[in-house]
Structures are given as C-alpha cells and as structure tokens.
Figure 1 (cartoon, rainbow, N blue to C red):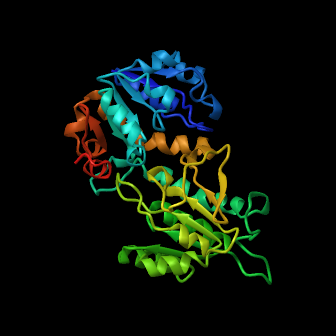
Figure 2: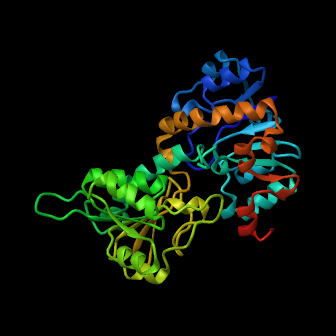
Figure 3: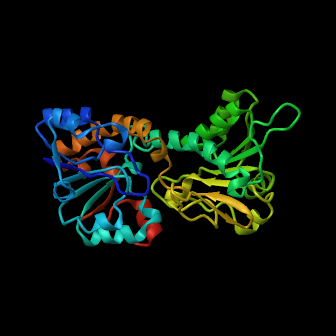
Length: 358
C-alpha cells in the first residue's frame, strides 16, 4: 500500500506521525512510504534519515495522493480539500467537537479512523493515552504560566515558599490526563484536589498518593465548592469519542478568585467550561470573566520530540495491521472501534449521538 505522511500545518504543530524507524518497518513489510519533505525536520528527523529507511521524499501533493494518509492532527482547511473518495485517513480527529469536518469527510467519501477511539482488548484507548499523559503533565506547566501577572493571572506560585501557602489546584477528571496533572501538581507541592465520578478510581488515587491528594466525588455541589476556591482548574473530563461534559458554567467562573486560571485540556472534545474556546501555542491565553483561559488543542506539540516518539511507538502496530489489510477497520476489534466515518456515514455510535445522526 502507498502510505502518505504529510507535514503537519496546525499552529506550532511540530510532531510527525511516523519516525524513520517506523518507515523502515513499513518498507520491510512491502509498503511504499511517501514522506512529505521536511515533515520531521523540526525535531531532527531529517529527509536523509527517512530516505535511508527506504521512504520516498515527496511534495505535499504526492503525500496527499496516497491511498492511506497517516498524520497526527485532524486535517486543516487547506488539507481537507486534498482528500478524495476511497482514501483512508488515520489520525486524531476529535469529530464530536468538529461537526463541519465530520460532514466534509462524509461528503468526500473518506474512511476516517480516529486514534482517540481505537481500543485495546481491555477497552482502553492506547493511541490516546501517551498524548493524554503528556497533556496532563503540561497542563500544570501551562497553568503556572497563566497565573503569572504578565498573562493576566493573580500572581500565585503553585509550590508556595517558606511562610506562604502553596496554590490550590483543582482537577476535574481522574483519567489519564487528570492523574498525570495531579502527579505534577503534587510533586510541586501544590494543594491539590481531584474530582471524579468513579469511586474505584478515587480510591486508587487516594491510596497511591497516601493523603497528598484530596479526592471528591464529581457532583454539582462539590465541583462548585472546589472550583470557586481554586487558583488553577484543570479540565480533564473525557467521554470516549463524545463531546466533553460541560462542568463549569459562566456563573461559576464569576465566583472564582479574579486572575485564577483554567487550563481546559478537554478542549479538543469541546471543553469542560461554558467559556472555553480553542486557542493556539501562538496565543494560548485569553481573559474572560476575570479568569485566564488556556485552551490549546494540541498541547503535546510543545514537546514535539517526546510526543512523536511516544505516539509513534503505539500507533505503528495498528498502522502495519491496517496497511496489510484495509478491511481491518471492520474486522479488527480495536481498529473497528476507531472507525468514525465510512461510506459517507458516521459509524461511531457516540459520535453519531452527539452530531444527531443516529
């Protein structure tokens, strides 16, 4: 199969979907790998390295002309127009928050498989997990920047200093993003509270952190009580393949300390706050209701070298499976869970419900 690896064009998106090592594995399996020139150059993965692995270095048009398009982020407006009927698109899509893209992919007859809804035998999302780990860890780093006075923040240092209490961090969601955000916040010495609906998850986190993490059930009253006392809120709620639940209202934001920060990691699924809207690495922050919002939809791109290595490690086995037999998107349980659009229709039940096409 001809596999195209385009260079990412989303704002400050420096990741690349395939490493030279991955290209070598695909070529060894009998596939033709077409890597757009400079696709990995920003993180030191040179055209020469891909060429040495057996890949072809091609123009953007040639990369997008392949039967299978393998990339990191959802196609941007300038990329969607390159897609044609019968092509397979395998990447992060987050279509619940992007209905226009979903309809465009349906209209173009593309088979779209989303990294974030591919599952393993245990029902976990192995292609989402590594980027969620990174985004969770980065959320605290970004939150610290948002709290700086120059960005409109209230000037709170999360770890505190001797004689001054640490900042208060509230994390909404105890999944991969939330648990990794908690790990960094606790490591810094912040006063950290995590809310989730799953009692077993809360119990496991409580046991792991041995009292260093405060846990609460995520019902309306507890969310309001915690959020209104926070210096930093991390939105980490996730529902498989669906729009993120709205947990923070505008009215709730008005009750937070002025200059507090909200890092909404769930923004790629629509966001956990009523006031959240996507931002970019170029302009990550905006002020609304006196709260500094950071809603960057591709946070892991900030550490693109680490992110690329982590992502490529988990996606390659699925790519090899799909390239060997395109019908695997129907016959392989994990890839079938990742199938969002085929034959002009939405095939993922949760996505169909969110977009009203079920």
